[in-house]
Amino acid sequence: MNTENSFLGTDTEPVIPPNSDEKTLGLLAHIITLISTFIGPLIIFLVKKDESAFVTHHAKESLNFQITMALLSIILFISIIGILLLWIVGILTLVLVIVATIRASEGKLYRYPFSIRFIK
Image 1: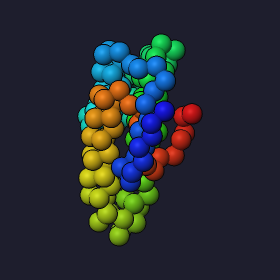
Image 2 (image 1 turned 30 degrees about the vertical axis):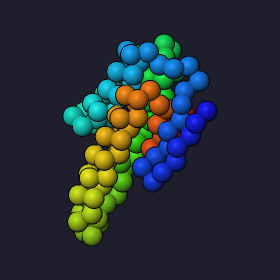
Image 3 (image 1 turned 135 degrees about the horizontal axis):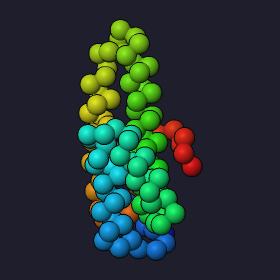
Image 4 (image 1 turned 90 degrees about the vertical axis):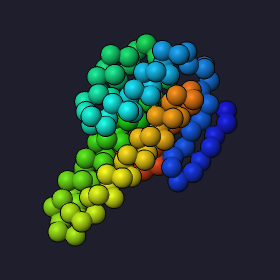
């Protein structure tokens, strides 16, 4: 199992290679967050959790990351200095979602670099 670590996250090769449909749903679990935050990955997770380990992994990672970023944004919004830092959270979220989408399209299992694992 190959593992590639970086400050942009960790990716590994799955034991069973995903098919084209699984790759599509995996990348959709990440990219849909640009318009639906955590609702899109939650729906994908609930629908596909018993059908595909690859899709389930990506939906859980995306959902956990979006919840983490929402909590961080709320905490920053409460403080005056934090309001000035919200744009950094937005840019970071966008970059990491793009990286996760690319990894899913490559058929790799991706883990966000700093995300609280609410759903295991």
